[in-house]
Amino acid sequence: MKKVNLLILSVLLLAGVWGCSDNKVNSVPKSEPYTSEKAISRGDIVSFEKVYNLDKFEQFITNLSSKKADNIRVTSYTDEGDPIFKDLKFDGNVISYSYDTSNDAFGGSNTGVRTDTCSEVTSKKNTQSEIIYSISGCTNNDSEIDYYLFRTKKATQS
Picture (cartoon, rainbow, N blue to C red):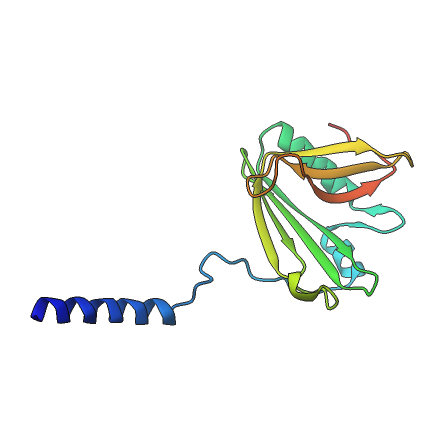
């Protein structure tokens, strides 16, 4: 009987500790919002009528090719002016990608920070002669679907 009581007590204690613990151990904290002017001055790649800090993106592409660690942030804004942050961190082998929509006031229940591990940045031309940059080869995603980064009229050097 003592063994049964000890087992029940152990299970209850374990359940209590697990229930009170923070289950967000691997969660990525949300970024604090900032203006497009601040994003541009920080070096974020920002796309409006033109792409700001495209040179930083071009350097990131070069570093991908040469397997050199690097990281960039692509910041876009909703129609209401809320920032959407896309962080790419390359360790020399894979790209850690995070997509932060937590500051989108009109994003509904789908807002938050999502992460993935990806293998490459891709580009393709659309019918308006723009280059669309995406990230692909991701582990949490269907291999046929890419994550959109931004679009521009100017192609980067690779």
